Length: 127
Image 1 (cartoon, one colour):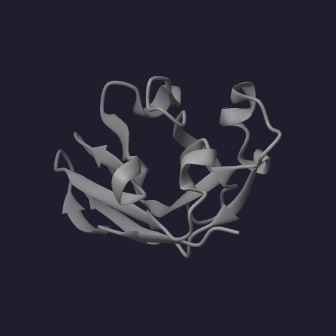
Image 2: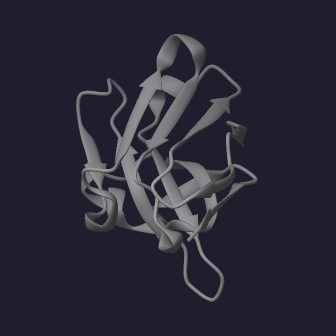
């Protein structure tokens, strides 16, 4: 079992930046592909970015490519999401999550493939 705690959200103007952090408890962090997902009001949860165990492979949804960067520090049991050039449409609750064991890397874009979730952190981008 792993527990996840996100931080770093807040209110920012369009064009600004935020860095989200997610700290995982337990000794199994390095067993998991990790992802950042988000849910905006009235919308379904969607995958934003994912990273492999080593950090050597990453995935980005088209709507954040070139603006967001996912990274992880396995020594600190932490995964990060650096968000630059934020837009009002990026407003959402952001969650980190583990890709379910047994899922292949190909499932990284499917929000239903993630099992353990943090409580989420609100990101609000004003225009």
